Length: 389
Image 1 (cartoon, rainbow, N blue to C red):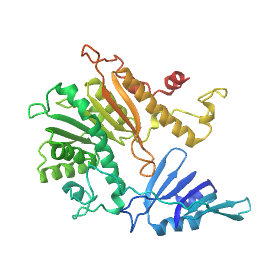
Image 2 (tube, rainbow, N blue to C red):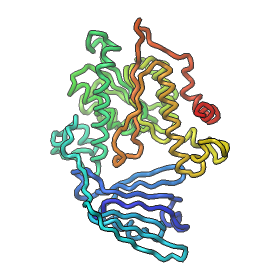
Image 3 (cartoon, rainbow, N blue to C red):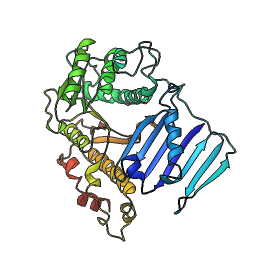
Image 4 (cartoon, one colour):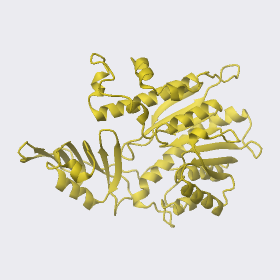
């Protein structure tokens, strides 16, 4: 049984065959215990500037290996339960197949024992409506990664609730006059927005107001209709741009899940300017610095020069630099910041979460930097690289 396969050194016909100039492709078996009948493999493909993930059936994964190992990609390492198979292709197109027996059989880890907040087997109305659950409460096999992702984010929300309550209410509690307020910037199909509202109001029994903002009118209309259908009176949605958002009520928590590029930075900027108590942000594509970095941006004798020579390294360096800058600037603006793994790489390569909770000085005054715009201004590559060096 195929466990994983890694393809590298693409040939000249890769772009013609795959439609994009891929520099690397990885396929691995999905450890989800529910993915038993259809999408049981995950594929991650890299170009020089981007990465893409998708689910594959067993047949699709095996077909890709058969058609591309040693052909469209000159190197391929395939792992089964008992063997490691290496395909090597030379300039004449001749393929060598090297087989090595594994002394310890490979096993697939599953998450059967995971104690999720939203539990499999217990029907949740909005998850059924959004296609994550069946009416019987079983997780749809192709949506198990989304189910795990939602639960993981809810765990992070649960972790910060005590700090947010203390910052907002002191020794008191959230109530009808002072509900907990949360905004989801770039809510999209609003899996997380619905889950957060359900978790806070139905499971934690905390009076709350949750708001989702996104640019897609049809998606927002669908979400608003769904909220009305289930009587979620304090869950609201609107069409809007994060960069131009000016809500009437200040949020206590701001969340962003894969808000693209500088949309994350506009959300962080809004949080800083409006004294938001906590931020949970999983960035998506970080192009702002990457688009400014060229192969010759850093001088050859710089220790950073080796990161600029290869597109994929330059992309990852830019992403890490961007998130490091975000974390540092939030610290400067009075937040205790942690950069954490969101979910494991098998679920998504975009797995870094920024968790920031407002700090207070001993006299109760919240520290604040005057450089609020620096979260966006710092994404200038000249300033960024100079600061790093």
